[in-house]
Length: 104
Image 1: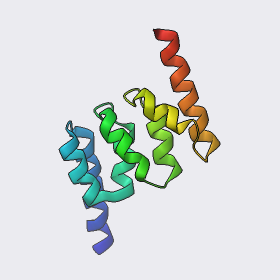
Image 2: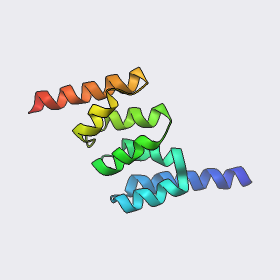
Image 3: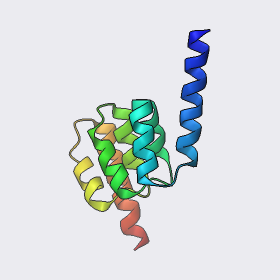
């Protein structure tokens, strides 16, 4: 029964992330849900450039990859990600930068 309650808690946290629209709320949820919430925030179109930059502190490649793909990630953060240790992150950041340059 304990693991079912934990799973429900995680699902609820992720639902809260999907509804969140402020850095304060995102930070609150990060403190509660760690990497799971970080990944969901990194994918969110409500994530601000500052919170996406903050997420670079998290080690999992999936989080940095999602930040590199997010359209709200700042140019400076994308440029930093082009030097990431993981090729997937580097390549996604470069593609995002190229797509933005073609839109300008």
